[in-house]
Length: 314
Ligand code: CP
Image 1 (cartoon, protein in one colour):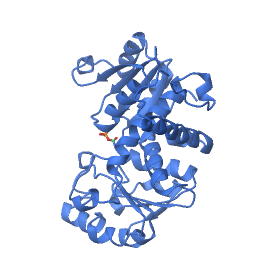
Image 2 (image 1 turned 45 degrees about the horizontal axis):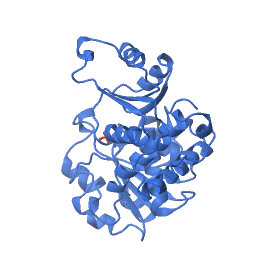
Image 3 (image 1 turned 45 degrees about the vertical axis):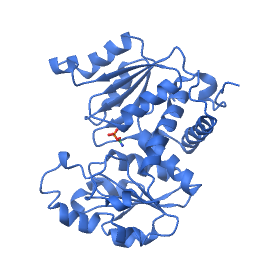
C-alpha cells in the first residue's frame, strides 16, 4: 500500500505487520540504538493545517530517528493566509522533494484529495471528524503491550463519539483485530449512522464499566459544538466522566486510555489520568514507535513493504 488514509483500509495482516514492526523498533530502542539509517536520503513533509502537539512532534521524532530529512509546515504563518489552496501548497512542498506527506486538516477527506495530487505517500494525521489512523494504531499497540492479544478483548470508547476521528479509526481497526468494541455517549453526541459501525452502542457508562478490559475516554470537543449538544459540564461529568469511583468498578488488570489532549475534571478525573491503570503517557511514547513503523513500511523500499526485518546496525 502506498498511503495510510483510513484504518478501514488495513486488513488484519497489514495491521499486524505495522504493530509487529513497531514492536521490533521498540526492542531496537531498548538496546539504546537511538537512530537507524533506514530512511537516509528520504524527505518527510509534516503538513499541519490544524493544531497538534503529540501527532506533529511524534511524526517529526519518528522521521528523524529513521534518518529522514524533515520539513515542518504549519498553516499559521504560511501563504495559506493569502488564500493559497491545499493543492498548491502540497505541490509546492512536493517540488521541494517530499517522498512522504503527513497531513492534518480540519476538512474530512483532505488527505484523500491530497493523495490524488502528489506522487509521495500520504499519511492521514487526522482529518476533521473523520479519521486518525495512526492514533488507532498506537492505541492498539499500547493495548497489546499491556493486555496481549486483542482477540475477544472488550474495549469501551466513551464520550464525544460524534466529533471524534479517534473513535471511528479505533472502531474500524479494533474490529479488524478481533476486539469487541462498544461506543458510549449521550444521545446528542452519538453519530446518526452509528448503527452501520462494527460495534455495540450504549448510552449507559455504568453498565459497561464492569465489562470493559479497556475504557478509552475521549475529549469533549466543545469547539465543534453548541449548547444543544452539551448542556452543562457538571451534568456531562456526572453521567459520562470517568472518576475514581467508576474506575474502582473496572475489572482487575483493565486499563484506562485517552488520546489527549485531556479535559481533566470533565471527561476524566485527575486521579484516574494519573493512576496505575492509565496508559496515557505510554500512548505518547508508543506514538513515536508506531509512526516510525508506518514511515518505514511506506517509504523504506520494497523489502520493508514485504515485511522484511528492520535493518539494525551491528
Ligand atoms: N491525540 C492527538 O492527536 O493529539 P494532538 O492533537 O496533540 O496531535
